[in-house]
Image (cartoon, rainbow, N blue to C red; front, side):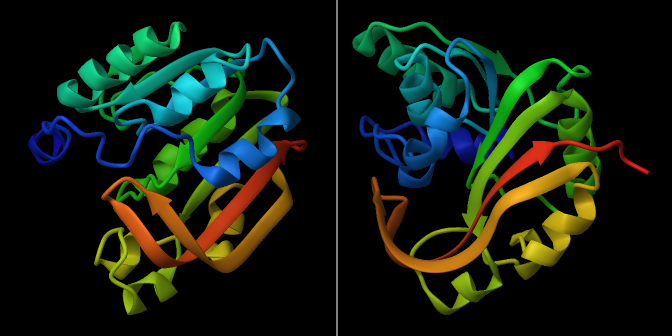
Length: 203
């Protein structure tokens, strides 16, 4: 899979642009300034660099070496630092109660690994830590504006509630919106956006 993303990120342009995701920008101030934030499947770094420019201590993780190069170049251009870890999510050490927030923007995982990754995310959040995500939902298959074509890789509010048993959802919403993020995300899109807070122990 890293070969796929290395090819996608090998061009001069940033495939999903250099501006942070609009949903993340709109809710990022919910994260206390100076917090430790993990951005998963971070690609070319647009969201991590945005957060670093707003006084967060940011670690990014992705399996693409080409993505890492461009993320570090973007960080340098913007005068910020990010810690970029090269790893797939299955083998990445999320830690336990380590992060004030974990950010997942258009990270679509196979249903064979997704529940286990989500459990790692839960354990890795500090108490009262935030999980902020946006992804496509199954209705996105009606559009040709980005995202995987396999329905099992598209999140639903039911699957997110099921796979995050220790989160209380402050927001979990399906919506239709025009998005413009580089060449990769263009046009009307069917989205699932959420903000979860770690409040209770998983059963």
